[in-house]
Length: 456
Length: 162
Image (cartoon, rainbow over all chains, first blue to last red):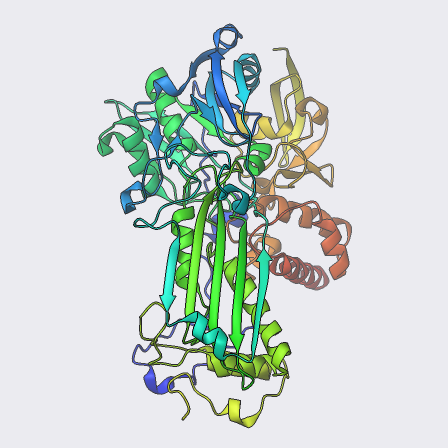
C-alpha cells in the first residue's frame, strides 16, 4: 500500500498540487482491455512487403564481398538493399545534440563490429520468401580479433573496434573520459581513519518488451511516406531518418505513441530508416519487425558497467573522500551511451556531501551488442554500487547504515562536487520515513536532522 | 500454396475460411479476419500474448494450425462478452491498474477467463498457475493477480444473486 505524506516540507509548498495520491485510470486502458488499442502492426496494407535482414555471424570481421545474386532468384524476393542504396549510410542517433562523430552504418559494408549487425535487407512478398532470400545471400568475411571487456579495450594494442573514433573510447571535450574534480582526494584519504576500495559490475540487461521492435512504412501520394512505428522516440526517428535518407522532413510522417513495452529499448533508430528506404525504392508498403531472437540478440540492452569506488571515512562517520572509476560498455557504437556515461558522472558521488571527489567515467567501445537507453541508464547500476558501498562503510566503522546515510546526506546549501549548490534536498526525511516503515529505530540525534539545514 | 477449407465457430458465430495449409490460427485471425486483439509477441509459444480459448481451454494461437480448428469453437478478446458490455475481468483490469502497455492484456484476460470458467473460486496460487504462460513486462503481475481474484469474487456474487 502506498502512503502519501504531504506533511513534509509543507511550509515550503506553494504549488497547491492535488493530484499526487489520487488514483486515476489510464486514459488508454479501455482500449487495452477490449483489444481495440491499435499497435503499429494492427493494420492491413495490400501489397505489403516483408523485410528480413542478413546479419553478421561474427563479433568482428572485415567484409570481403557480398553476393546477393542467388537471393534475387528466390521466388517472391522483390529486391535487396545494401549500404550502396543508403544516401547517408553513416549516422549516430544523438548527432542533433552534439554527440559526434557519426560512427554507425545503417547497413554494414566494410566491417562488422558486433554479432548480429545488419548488412543486407531482403524484401519479399512473404516472410518465408524473405527468410529464404536471406539464407541465399553470400557474405565472405575475414575474422578479426574481438574485444569484449572494457578494461581490455582500453589497453594499448587492443583491437580497434570503431574506426570513426580511432580509439576505443568516446572523447569528451578533448578528454578520454567524463570527469568530476572537487577538492583533493589524496588529502581526504590521508585524513581518513579507514580507506576501502571495492569493485562492482553488471551484465547487459535486455528490456524484452512483449511487442518486438518494428515498423510499417506506407507510400502515400506525392512522394510522401507514412511510418507506423512503435518507437519511443518519434522525433529522434524523424530527424535521423531525414538525415539518413537526405529527405526533407515534410516527406516523412511518423505515426506512433502506442508502444507494447519499451523501457528504453525502443529509443534507438534502427528499423525505420531502412523501412522508409525500402518503401521509397519499391513504392510498396514495407514491414520490418524484429523476431523474438533479434529482439534479444541485436536490440540495444542496458550497458554493462564496471565501477571501482575508493572511499576514505572518518571514525565519526563522515566520508572525507570518494574516488570513482566507472566504465560503461557502449558496445560497438555510440547510440545513447556517451550521454548515459555523462549521466553516470553527474550522478556521482551519490546524494552525499563529500568534500573531496574524483570521478572518471569512461564510455568504452567493445565488440558487444551496442548498448543504449534503459530505465535510468547511467544511474541505476551506479546507485547499486554506491548503496552497497554505503552499507560496507557503515559496517566498517560500526555505524547504523540508516544513521550513516542521514549523517552524510546532502543538505540544502551544501556545495555538490559538480559545483552546484544543493536545493530541494529530501534524503534525510526519506531515510527517516523508511526507518519508520521498516521498524528500524534510529537515534534521536538523527531523527532531529533535516535536509533544510545542516546541524551545527 | 495449398488452400484448406476450415469451418469453425468464432466468437459464437459460424465461420468458413480458406486458409493456407500450414498457416497458424494467429495469422488467420489477424491477417485474414482483421481481429487484431490477438497479439503476436514471439511466434514461438513462449510469451502467451496470442492466447485464445479453444473449446474451453487456453491455447497459443501462434502454435495452433488454422486447419486444426475445424469443428472447434474459438474465442478471442473481441468475443469475450458478445453483447458489448464489459466482462468483470475487463472491469477489474481497468480499475486495478492491471494493464500498462496493454500488449499482454488480451492473452492475460483470456487465460483468466478460461480459469474462471473451470474454477469459479480459484486460490491465489491457482491464478498464478493459470497465467504462468503469459509474460507481462510492465506490472510485476501483482495487479493482474489481484484483478483476476476481484473478478472471480464479482462473478460468484452475480451467480448467487441470479
